Image (cartoon, rainbow over all chains, first blue to last red; front, side, top):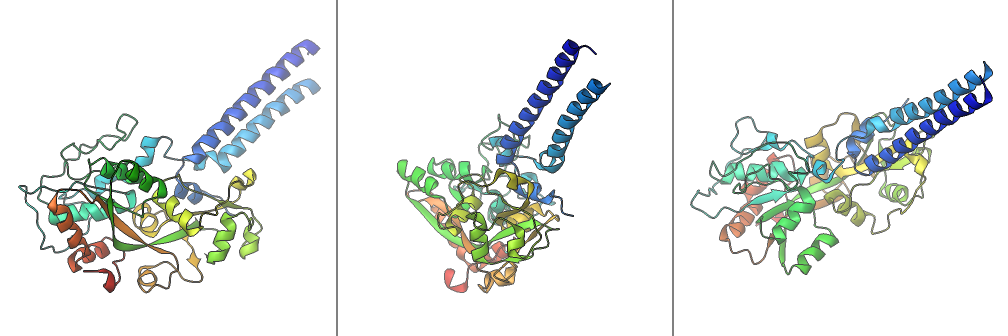
Length: 47
Length: 332
C-alpha cells in the first residue's frame, strides 16, 4: 500500500469514526436529559 | 500488511467505543425525547372512567352530579390520573368523558386526546397547572406547585386554592441488583450535594454514584428541591453516568403505575416506604398532594367536589386508589 493511499484511508476511517462518536455522544447528552429515569436505572448492569 | 493492520485496528477502536457506549448508556435511554413524549408517562387509556376494564378504584359515593350540572373539568399529574379518573367514575354522569385516543406527539401536545368538551383531561403537571390558571381546567390534582408555577399564577392574576387531599411519600430508588437497601436522609443529601460520590461510602460496592435528577417543573423535581433545601449539586463528574444510579419519584407513581420490577425503593433512616409507615409518620419524607383551583372559579360544584374529596367517602376513594388518606385531623 502506497503512503498516499494509506494516509487517505487512515484519514477517512479516523474522521468517520470520530464523527460517528461525536454524534453518538451528542445524542446521549440530549436523550439523557429527557429520558425516563426509571427505565434508565432499571437497565443498569450490576455484576 | 502492517498498514492494513493499523487501518483495521483504527476501525475496531471506534466500533468498540461506540458499542461500549451503546451497551452501557444508549440502550438505557428511552421515552420522553420530546415535550410531547413527556406527557405519555402513563397509559391514560387504562384509567378511563365508566369503562368496565379500567384500572380504577370504585367506592360508594353519595355525591352524584347529573348531566344538567356544571361539571368541573379535572386534570392532573401523571401519578394522580387514577385518583381523578376514579373521582369522575364515582361522582360524574356517564358520557361526560370522551377519549379520542391517538398517539401523543408534537401535533397533539396539549392532551387533545380528550375531546374539548370532555370533563377529563390529561396534560400532566407543567401544562395542566397552567390550564387552571388559564381557566380551561377547573381543578388540578398535583404535588405542591413549584415556585415557578406559583409565579406564573401570580403574573396572570390568579389567586389559587391549594387544598391537601392525601398523603404521598417521596422515595429514592436504585437498580434491584444494587446491594444497598437503605440510606439516611443525611446520606441522600450528601449524595445530591456531591459530598458522597461512591457507593462504598454508604456500605455498597466500590462504584461511582450517578445521582439522577428530573426535569425542572415536574412534581418530583419540585419535591426534591424542597427536600434538598435549595442546595442541589450544580455540577458533577461526567463519568458518573457509568456509575450506579440513584433516582427519586413519588411512591405510587413508581410502585403503583410504572411497576418496574428491576428497580427497588430504598428504606430511609431504616424505614421502608410502605402505606403503614407513611400513615403512622415513621417514614421521614412524606408530602401532601393537592387539588388546585382558582379562588374566583364561579362553578359551585368545584367547592362541592373539594368538600367531597375531604370527606370520609373521598378519603376512602383516595385510599382505594393506593394512596394514603389525610390523618383524621386533616379531614372535614
